[in-house]
Amino acid sequence: MLSAFTAIYARDLRLALRRRVEALLPVVFFIVAVSLFPLGVGPEPQTLRVIAAGVVWVCALLASMLSVANLYALDHSDGSLEQMLLSGHPGTVMAAAKAAAHWTITGAPLVLAAPVIGLLLDMSPQGLAVLVGTLLLGTPILSLLGGMGAALTLGLRSAGVLLILLILPLSIPALIFGAGAVGAVDSGISTSGHFSLLGALLIITSLVAPPATAVALRIALE
Amino acid sequence: MLFKGVNMEVRAGSAVWLRGRNGRGKTSLLRLACGLSVPDSGTVLWGGVAVRRASGYAQRCVYIGHANALKEDLTVTESLRFLAHLHGRAHDGQSIDGALARVGMASRRDAPVRTLSQGQRRRAALARLALERRAALWILDEPYDALDVDGIACVNGLLHEHLARGGSVLLTSHLSPGAAAPEMSEFDLDPFA
Image (cartoon, rainbow over all chains, first blue to last red; front, side, top):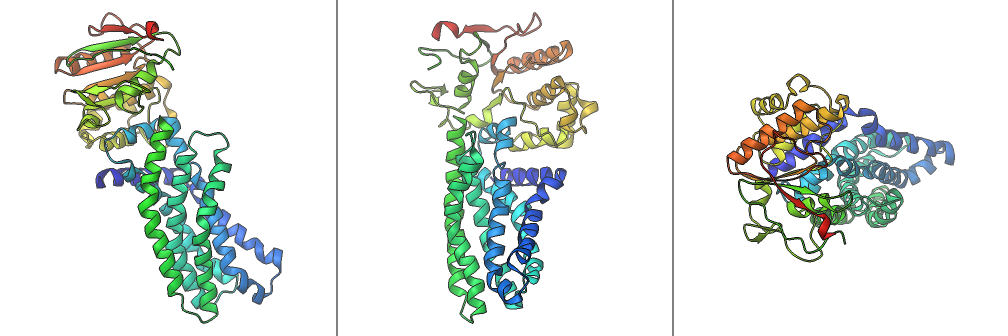
C-alpha cells in the first residue's frame, strides 16, 4: 500500500514539475488577490490588520479550489484512473496520495507565502505565527475536501461550479477557526481552542474524505 | 441496457475474440470482466468467485483499454514504470528497457509521451504485456488499433507466448487479428443486443 501511495505521490509531483506554470498558478493567484486588498480597502494599517487573517484565509481557500477541479479529470480522460483502481490497492490509498500531492503542490506554497503576505497586511509577529500554524492545519483539509468534491463531480457537466457549491460550505468551519485564531491572539485570548478544533477537523477529514473519494471514483467509473 | 443473456467463458490457455457492431457493448463487457463496472443482473466470475471479491484477481488481470493510460508530460519509460510499479510488476530499468525493446520502442524510451504518434502510444501501452511473466487474464480493448504491420506482429507474438504459458485473452478488435494471430474462438455480441 505504501508503495502505491509513493508511486502516485511521486508521479503527481513529477507531473507538476513538468508543468511549473500551471502548478504555480494557485500561489500566484493567492499573492495577487491578497495584494489587491490594500488597493481596494485603503492602505490604513489598522484596517488591514483587522481584515488580514480573513483575507489571507479566503484567498487561500479560493486558490486551493482553483487547481482541485483537475485533480482526477486528467487521469480520468487518459485512462490512468482506471489503471489505479484496477491495481488491487485500496482506492483510499490512491485518494490519500492524490490529496497529499495536491497539498504539497498547492497548500505548502500557500503556507510558505503566508508570512510575506501577512507582513504586507501589517500583521503582528504573533499573528503571523498563528496564521502560519492555522494554514498548516487548514490547507490539508482543503486538499482532502477538494479531492472528495473532484471525485463526486468527475465526468459531470459544469463540474467546476458544482465542485465549488459542494466544497465551499464544507470548508467554512476551517475558515472560521483559522481566521478566528489570529483574531484571538490579537485580542490576547488563548488560541488553543481554535487549534484544537482545526486539528479535530483535520483528523475527521483525513478519516472520512479518502474513503468517500474512493467510493465516488468507483461510482464515476461505473 | 446494452445486452442481456450473455453467457461466455474464457478458459486458461485460450483466447476469445469478442465481436459485434459499434455500440453493441463490447467495451462495456470488457469493463465488466475486469471489475470496473458491475452488471445490472448476473455475475462475472473468476475461478467461481465474483471478480470484485476474488482474491488476487487484480494481480492476475491485465486490462488495457481504449485509453493508453500514459501521461503526456512523462517520458515513455516513466509512464511504463509507473504502471508497472502500481500493478506490482517488475519496474527496474532492465525490465522496462526490455519491454520497450520488445514492442520496438527502445529508441523512444526517453521521449515525452506527447511527442509520440498514436501508433507509438499504443505500442508503449502494450509494452506492459511484455512485462508479464505469469499466466493471467489479459483483457484488451482494440489492441491492434493504430498499429502498423510490425506492431500487429509484435502483439501477436506476445499473445502466442502468453497463451503458451497457460494465460488467457479476451479481446475486441474491429479489424481481423490476421493470419499470424493465435487461434481464437469468436463470440458475437450482436445476438444479445
